Image 1 (cartoon, rainbow, N blue to C red):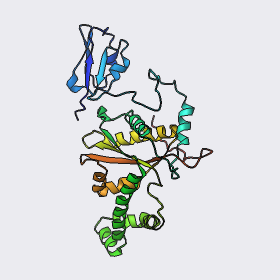
Image 2: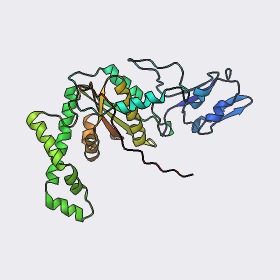
Image 3: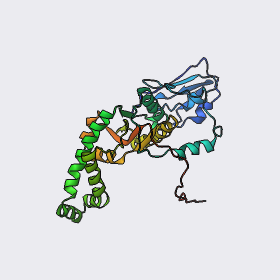
Image 4: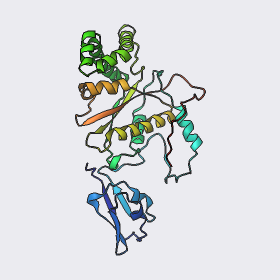
Length: 301
């Protein structure tokens, strides 16, 4: 897809060192008469050339260039070279973040939500498409209204799944999805709907005061991967900013089956949502790390 990015070389500043040609993944940079040139039509505008240039002679800019637009924290002036960040602290952050299902009754400020979206776009994207969008439900009321729409979807689904003849007929026709849903989720969803209706207990977003939906244009080369990489960045940044997060897979699944739920929150038809993140200030504090499964590894020499 056309990202709208451009790459410009300031010839008077270029010293012809050739570093930009070495790091260019698309091989569209070359030296001519001792100066760097670019075949811009085939350029990914990944920015490697700008980042490596010792003379700051290259600018890779998008239609709306943005960097360092963070309100709640500062970032270093220069990138950290490999090996210059403590791996133990990084893994400690990853292990410390847990799915939060206990939120305080406290709104998340708009600047914090904007910062999290900014963190999201620092993630890599296929062919540097940067085609992500972050839809934010910034009030508890907005979250509840969307939860009602999702709840209605699951009410309809449970009514269908509660019909054994229909389930078995579809399974016999090679469509076992409804039968599998009945086996794996019907009872828990039925219980969650009853708790919501009778007691106001939110088993979907767990009382979160905000929700962020990460979507990507369907024209992107790797939309699902881009959105999920961005989501992981957001989860870790949210923890460092004092927030709890929880990925809500049921909301993503509901949008896949019922596109009107995406339209309900303003996601256009040419975007697909890949992650829904409940956000808020946690009301519980965890005191220790817990174990994970040992990694499954395959080596081939």
